[in-house]
Length: 59
View 1 (cartoon, rainbow, N blue to C red):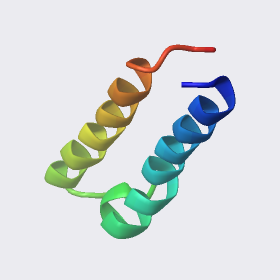
View 2: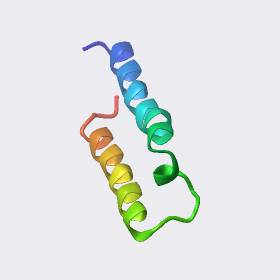
View 3: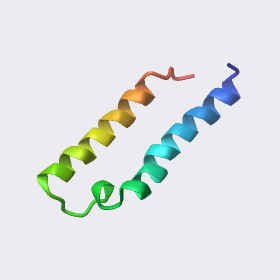
View 4: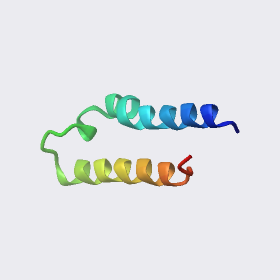
């Protein structure tokens, strides 16, 4: 995969987790105070984002 295509795909993944998923999950991903269960979901989303991005090499 060429570098430009790689960076485009990486940006798409970041955008999905930063914007699309946050909009879809609404309150769960907001900074508003949430219940214990919602905090767990929010933390899981952040961990999944970090995990997926860590699989991609820095070019």
